Structure formats: structure tokens, C-alpha cells
Image (tube, rainbow, N blue to C red; front, side, top):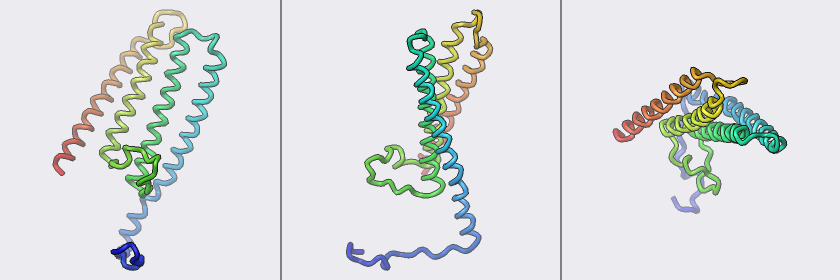
Amino acid sequence: MTPDAPDSDRAVPAPLRPLPFLIFSSRWLQLPLYLGLIVAQCVYVFLFLKELWHLISHAADFTEQQIMLVVLGLIDVVMISNLLVMVIVGGYETFVSRLRLEGHPDQPEWLSHVNAGVLKVKLAMAIIGISSIHLLRTFIEASRIGLPNATVTSEAVMWQTIIHSIFILSAVGIAYVDRMSQTRH
């Protein structure tokens, strides 16, 4: 087809029968879910700004440890927000419809090769990052175990460490299975 050829020269796909059309169209039922995640991200932006204001307005009253805990909380919010972006953009692109971002200067690098397997591995890695931040916060708070007003028990530290280790093992398993399925194709 030449650049001057009319659009009528393009192959037009045959219309789907009613049942396949209904099944294929059902993917649009996910749209409200992705819109809801966008609203959840707005809530995280509000939470981030609130915590940032709290840090700025009380910085003179905080100890170094308190500042570190608030900053870790801010990092946690950012990482969860990144996770939301991956789910919203990657999930919509993979399961609902193409975003047609090819050539757009702001297209995320990872979006050009996203599929369900890649998305699962990226999500697992993001969850490990979020879990790491929570575990670090717990370790910092755990330094107060035995002191008055301690908020973390040694049992809580143990369980969080076990859960974090399971997240890591799960991510390794997901990546291994994805790699095995890629080498077969």
C-alpha cells in the first residue's frame, strides 16, 4: 500500500459472532477498576502531601530517628504509587486496550515490552521493595523493644521477616516460571 492509498485498501476484519463479541467486549468491565485505582492514587498523593507537610512543619521537634521514619513513610507512599502506575498502565494496555503511546516522549520504557508475565515480575519486585521499606521501619522501631511506649514486639519483627522472605521466594519463583515459558516460545 502506498502512502497515498485510501483507507479503503486496508483489510477490514470480519465482524465477530455475537457470543465471541460479548466475551471479547467484557474486557471493558475492567475500566471502572482502573479508574478506581486512579482515584486511589489521588488519595496517596494527598497522603504524601500531608506527611510531607507534617515533616516540614515539625522538623525542628523531631529526632533523627523520627525524621527517618517519616521519610521512609514518604518513600513507601511513592513506591505504592509506582506500583499503582504499573498496574493501571500495564494492566490496561495488556488486558483492555492499547494506549497507542508509540513514539510519545513520555512513554515508559518498560511499556514497550509488557505482557502478563513481565507485569507479574515487575509487580512482585515492587511488592518486595514496599515490603523492604516496611521491614526497615519495623527494624528501626524494634530498636525500642523493651522501652516504654515500644510499638513493635519481637514476634512482629519475626513474622514480618518471614513474610518478606516469602515475598522474595515468590518473586524468584514467578521470574523463574516466566523465564521458562519465554525460552519455550
